[in-house]
Image (tube, rainbow, N blue to C red; front, side, top):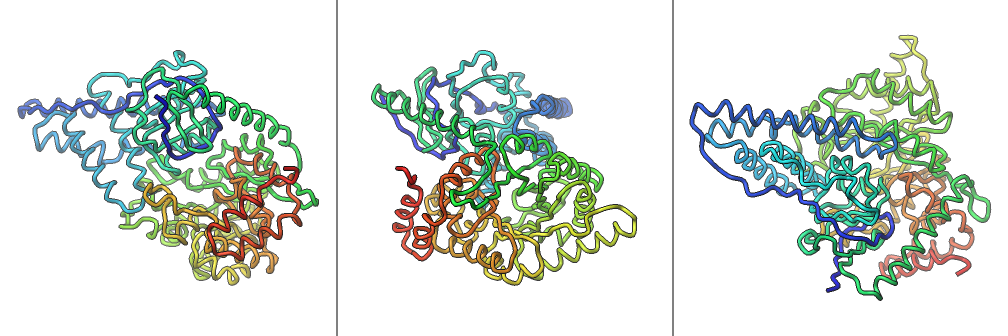
Length: 579
C-alpha cells in the first residue's frame, strides 16, 4: 500500500531506493540485585564499558576522512565530551552502590532521569541535545551487554540503499563513511539537530522528524525520499515512481548546470557585483570553501574550537587555528566571530549553571564580557592572526551600544598589550557587530558609528522577533522568514548601514535560501554568507536577476503586512524572466 509521510526537509535532492532498517534502540533492560561483595566488580564493569565506548568514539574520530564535513568531527567531539560528564560516567556508579543493582539498570535509571530533565526544558533547540545523550548511552549499553551495534557492514550496502532509523548519530555517519548509500530518514530530529546539520553538510537526500517511519517501513521495501519537500513515500505505485524519476532527473540536470557557474563572477544582469561568502566551523573547512567559489569566509564560528575538549584552548592554540585559515584563504577576507558559547554550547570547563531559559541567559557577547580574561585571550589570538591575512572580528548577540563599546574597549586593551609586547598585528583590523536581537536592529543607527561592517544573523533574529522556535513541531509552521516584522527589521538594518556607509551582510539561513535571494537583493543586500553547499544555487539566482525588474515586486512585499499577499509576491518574484 502506498504510504506518504511528512517530516522536515533537509535537502540533497531526491532518492529512490530500497529501505534498510537500522536498529539502535535499547532492548528491555534486566534488573537484578547484588550482594555487597559484588558491588566493586559491577562498578568496574561499568567503568570498563565507558572506557570501551570512549575508545570506540576516539577511533571513529581518528578515522574521519580529510574531505568529510567539519561538523562530523565537532559532533563526535561533543559525544566524547558527554561521555566524560559526571551525569553519565559517575552517577550510574553511585546508583549501583546505593541500590545494589546491576550496571544496566543503573544506567537506565540515570538515562530516564536525564531524558525527563531535557523534556522539561522550554528551549527547543537545547532540548534536541537529548538525542546526543541517548546516542552516547546506547553505546555504553552495547558495551555492557557485549553486543556490537546492530549496524550493517558498510560494504554490504548498495548504491540505492536508503537508511531508515529512529536516529543516526555522528558516529554512525563515520561508520558508513565508505558506503555509497543513497539517502537516510529518521524518526526524530529538528531543523538544527546534529542529524539535520550532518545531512545538509553531506548533501544527501534526507528527511527527519518522521516520527513513525522506522515502525511502518519493512526491510527492502521500495521508498522515495524527497529532501526538497520533506516527503517520504513508501511502496509507491508506477505513476508516482514515474513522476519522481522525472523530478530526480531534473534535479540532477540542475545540479550539473550549477557546477558550470562555479568560477563565474557573481554579478546581476545589470552588472552589480554581489559578494558570496561561506560559513565555516573549523580550519579544515577552508578546502570546501575554495571549491565552492566563495570570495571569502563571511562567518567563522570560533566556538567550535572550544567544544569537545576538557580544557579551555590556550591563546596560542587559538592563534594557530585562526592563522591557518587566514593564510589558507590567501588574502581573501576571513570574518571570525568571537566565541558564541552558552545556551546549548556549554563546554564542561566553562563551569556556568544552565539558565532556566538558556537562549535568554548568559550567552554570546554577554558571556565574553562576564569572562574578560578568556575574552581577551581570544581577542589577542585574533589580532595576532590578523598579521597573516585579511582577518575581521565580529561580536555576536549584541543587545545595546553599551555592550558594543565594552567589547571594543576589550579589543583596544588587547591591542595595547600586544603593542607593548612587540607582537605584530593589523592595527586597522575591521570590527563588526552581529544584528540578531530585535533591540540591536532597532538601535543599529548608534552601532554604525563604531563598526566597520554589520552582519545580520537571521536565525536568531526570526526566533527572538516571533518568539517561535522552528524545532517545535507544534509551532514550526509559524516560523516565518518573510513575516512583515522580520522583513522590517532586516530592511531597517540594511538601509541604515548603507546610509552610513557601513557594509551589511546576512549570514543566517536566509542567505543560503535561493527563494529569498531576489528579495534580499531588492532590499539592498549585496553581501551574502552561507554554507558552501548553498552557494551555487544562490549564485544562479544572482546571475539571472536584473535589479530593475525585481525592485517593484520587492517593494510591494516590503510595504505589505498581509502574509498571503507576501507569499504570492514572493512566488512572482522568483519567476524566471524567460518563463
